[in-house]
Image: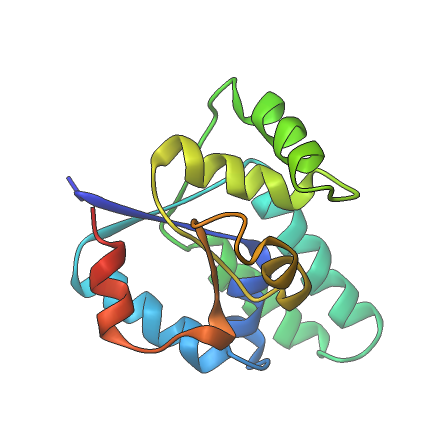
Length: 155
């Protein structure tokens, strides 16, 4: 059983799947996590957010229908454990208030990271900037600086 965990949000996975900015960093991190036996965890809204974003890319013709189907298949096969802890909703609400955020979507990921005592990786620059200096759990793909930082994340 993996000894270290990492929480991922939908924006990080989308970056890797769609070759968006910082997508290479996410794909490299995934390889590192797999090679070093990390467990990937997330919140219950993860799959819905991922599927909705992929569908939007197809609808607005940023992806072909075939590309959308392929990306969806890959996303559905990711080895990510959804954490169904009853305290996620309350903790997400409390964190949204604490950090003065307008919604609880992003804080659900952060709540999972807090419950699982692990870092949370995102490609959402606005979120990362709004939490900079407030939460030590948030990692922005654009700030990724290699293995030294990853080794510090291992519990």
